[in-house]
Image (cartoon, rainbow, N blue to C red; front, side):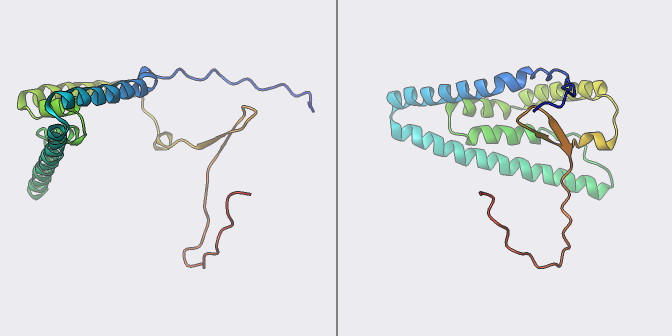
Length: 184
């Protein structure tokens, strides 16, 4: 049934960024490459040796993450005792990322994780990340605090968007009744 009211036109959907488009494809390709490389190495040196290599990576990665976390906590503690804020992270974030990559099962991720543990590589990557962060911060437009949190949007089957907020108004000390099942 039509009411004769004109159908509202909505602006075209914004284009997806390249990252959102190619990230799932890149992750899938990386996983396939990791599995293929593990099978090739397992054929060459044996399955038990590859298993022991993966276990050693898990142990080494957890040690690296623990050490980097301890260093970061000590730096934060010293800065707070001085009454200031901690200066640069000292590569702790990149060390933690390297430890995480070493913990992941796979040889490519292990190589990248070990590469991140080298101090000159950490210095170059942290300088690049800092420049990129500063550039993005300068390019950002000013907005209100409310712009940081968008309202919930419900997409209806007919294409209309209903904006709204979910507000749960329950007293804290009221007895809770069992809720009915969601399926009907």
